[in-house]
Image 1 (cartoon, one colour):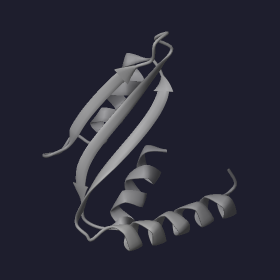
Image 2: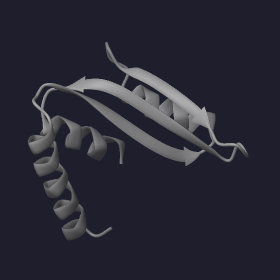
Image 3: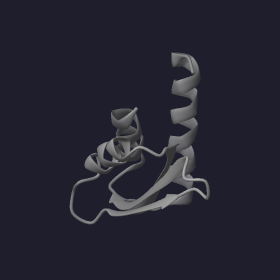
Length: 87
């Protein structure tokens, strides 16, 4: 994704978050990655603060893992910033 597309994506997401939630609000991050314990732990460390509920689910064949993180975020911008931090 080029920078213009990325900027447009995050701008649209910010508007959607502002319209659908009152802030602070619980937000569900979901990542689907190739199953690799190191990568899973790395994602988890980005949310290593009080209140984050982290759940993992391995695919039927074990090739992929879904990592779901439910956490209270202060603003739509804080949600976006966390995505950018992880990327």
